[in-house]
Length: 442
Ligand code: GBH
Image (cartoon, rainbow, N blue to C red; front, side, top):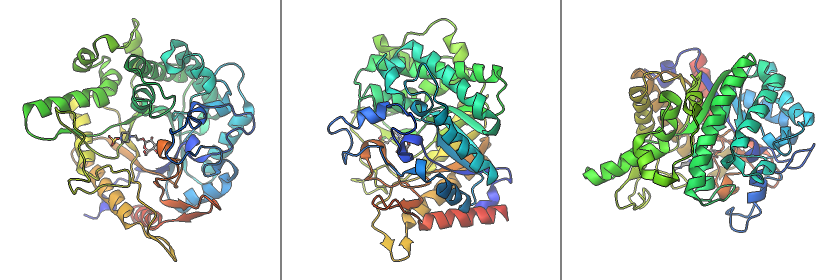
């Protein structure tokens, strides 16, 4: 059966972006500094020494970008709201002008018949809160709940899906343990406390938003992989299991079972987070959906040696991440097997960075990206056939953008962005996605 026929008529198809990566207008209309604005100033932090001051200038090109999204034929658009735009310091006064922008965005989507999927935290925490300890400080949890309620009060009636956090693992581990992302802290004890506070703020926000009469579907987005051993040796199998505990079950167990995994806790020892009575029950609020971001699998060995897919001649993207669609099916089926109460699942990000060396007279012929998308969408179909409750799929990303520590050097878009002129040009993959969706609609 052809691929598009394998998806039901109510399936949600989208493209995804995030505020810091596309908006620019970093200090306009009262926007405060975010931890990423600050982190970009740290020498060596960003590969091309760039920042988010202009990015794709989406803030000033909203209408053009809305038309672009509509031209793809998607029925959903996933974006994020920059907290420091809505509340400069993350505490104190809210800035109505900040929400004006997102109101124009959701109204523009509504006019075009496209569902709005909004994420409240895609990493750009107000620097004002970081100065008070950031996610390591339990008070930030309550500041987040206030911010979430404020956004819902103004826009909630026009948002189909509201996501508390994007990839808490990245914030905790890359931001606070490895220090390669903002805020650039290298402390495992802090990182685990950060992860706990992110989860707690998710649960408290879910409760508060529902008490306020939420009209949107509420959930969280996790970056998940398929953790597999490099060999059949017991030590490698154990290493893969522990990596799965830290990377996946650390988040999915609290959300669906109300507890942290014992093996990860034992491994953390004194670095385990401080958990107060009642926290775990709050985190385990039933969710309307789980968002999953998938890019690659993770191959683990007991030696700790990194798996170099490229050196092994395996297919990789421009991030050097292995292209492994089967890992997406394995991951999804694993979630269904591990959690009887699993919520409907949306793939909220999937896509690949590919170098821009295929620019031709007519545009960008990114066949490798088309292959990536087609094979991963097929992997979703396969999971669905195996009983995983799949509800949607969103491509990362609508357009080339600020790829965090890689700056503007890595391109994930199905639309090309010329960073001199800021012109947008759909790549062949955008045409492919449009045609795929046309076929699916029938
Ligand atoms: C997502 O992060 C973000 O939500 C999005 O903003 C970003 O632009 C996009 O992906 C592309 O990066 O490091 O070799 O072990 C994804 C972050 C990517 C972190 C895969 C873990 C594992 C590969 N994750 N990564 S490796």
